Image (cartoon, rainbow, N blue to C red; front, top):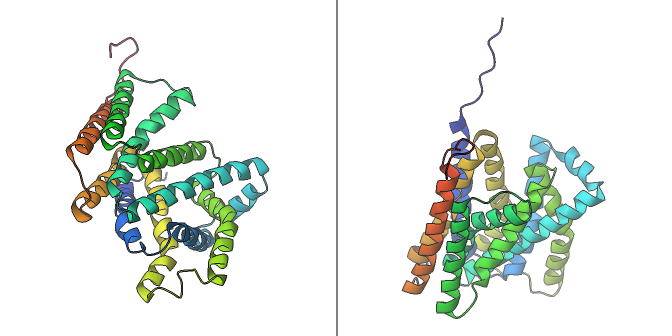
Length: 302
């Protein structure tokens, strides 16, 4: 009688998760080297070269039939196009923010994302909201309010990142496509627009390629690999790690953004901004505690 198959240990997904989150967390260093190129052009290149990269990955790992089958379903195509538009908006806001000296504000956006997901879960999906999650949302709102009052402006970069990424996450949650085929279809649907825009830039002599040095050109061409690689690592990690573990590890990303903006790029971090971040971090503390707290028997007091 053969021995039962041994399930792979959970830690097998840990290196892949850390690799994905470190890549995403260090992205500002990459995009800063493309600061001389218009952010919209950077995103157009990112779409085109991501499509090339993901096509190679699909040929290697399989999944092309799933993409073709999905492309024949109008409702699924519409949802995927909407998700791709939100992802494009997220990329554009992030790259523009990084290259205009707002890395710390970008980190604020990604600190707020899990709390935005709690809001969507409560008010869109009808999921229950715990007392601690409620306090987390109140503190996050207070933090944003402090920033608005002290800075005299709405932190639109952070809120734009929150809205686009939380909306994208919600649409992906409702999608029947796996991660890699879904991303392939998103880029395929938007690639014609990106190619048309790049062609127009080239014909009018405004395109970056051919007008920048070899190093910058290489970074532009590598944007597809840089985009797809962490997505593949994340998909691999998700096969082995609990979603709770993945969610907590994901905080690596905004913390790296924060420290890059503050220590490497020397962006200002005055007392008003520190107070806003403190409120949001305390709110995240409530959220993390609520996630990690073991479930209690029915009828037990909170």
